Image (cartoon, rainbow, N blue to C red):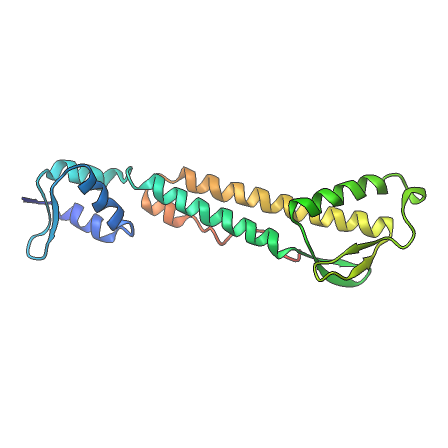
Length: 186
């Protein structure tokens, strides 16, 4: 076994994905071990150092994991609903796909004017209470929700794009998946 050069020793130790990189080296059939006296050693130092340099074998797995966290965060934000103030009352409203589809249908009805608007119309809040809404209240509410949901979709896509653009561990780790999301309420 030959010892990796000091640059590759330091690069491997500093990499937060060290276990993925060592697994990739081993999976490639390269003899590899961590010898406390001599550091990292390999039967094929050049091949091991190439894997450490490119980080290509673990990057797609790490990207996929980070994208899943982003997707889960998006779902959690949708499930949390949207806080909206209507007629001076702030309430949480469901913004799942079925609820937003219902909003679209009611917004179409609202476009028909007062004659098409039901007397005593109310939208059900997340806590199952009725919030009375005029046509203008409802249209402002639907615009608020639609803008928020669209912002969530765009933020999710931007974060995923940033993750996919990363070509190194440092670039991937620099993607802040907690930032960039719209605030609820706006």
